[in-house]
Image (cartoon, rainbow, N blue to C red; front, top):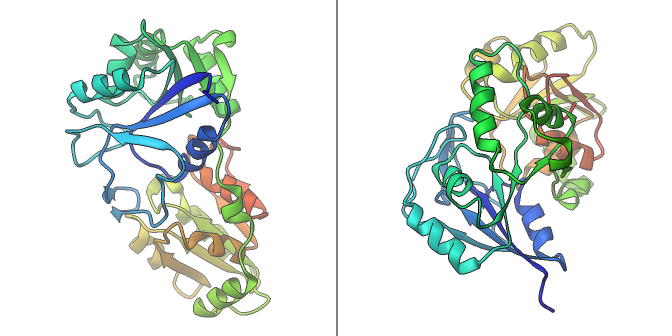
Length: 314
């Protein structure tokens, strides 16, 4: 049976949070899906983790995809990329989409579609930005975004903070639709108890110890030092597990000596579910997050979470 609509998803690079959604959408009876990546698929330096990252799960399974040729080998979430747009145009002409969903605007290829292909296709926009009050040049940013967003037919918002952002820009309500963040719930919902017990032994955590956990990048914005200071005030035998890596690792270890605080370093995707199931409560103290998809994973693992209000998912 031929599907009703040809859909191109234009995004920068394979992400563990997006891949399950792309696969599920491809199995829909309504959409013929092709994901077009504008950056090379390889291990890349992640400034947040302060190391080269290559995920150890398959992010390209279950859907049609291609990569634009002649992209830079390095990429960044907030930097524009130099690419040869001829590869982009050729791919779009070949696929002949009815709809293009663009993930973020801050790449040359994404801007090219918005400014030069708007009249040929219906353009949907996907992002999870929030209004960050107090930032410098906020007024000029708003004007710039108005110019970009005029070229979008429909905006797909992730939650209330993201919805308020589009309202702040001045987007008409009729052009905004709800499309929440999603993850592969099955991957996080069940982990063999034997694996969790073995991990507890490896970390030398005593049975019956209440385990608080932070999982993510160790950067100043994540506010992990505040979490450690709060944990020090507890007068019980609980433990704090810090899962992740980053530029703040050394300084955080220095303030955590002899306080039942454990650092695991970076944990890849295939291993992270059992760490979630080891914890009794997970805390995200970040100063700001556009969303915080780790929280989705933890809820799938049936774990209680404490989240700062500045996070988009709060």
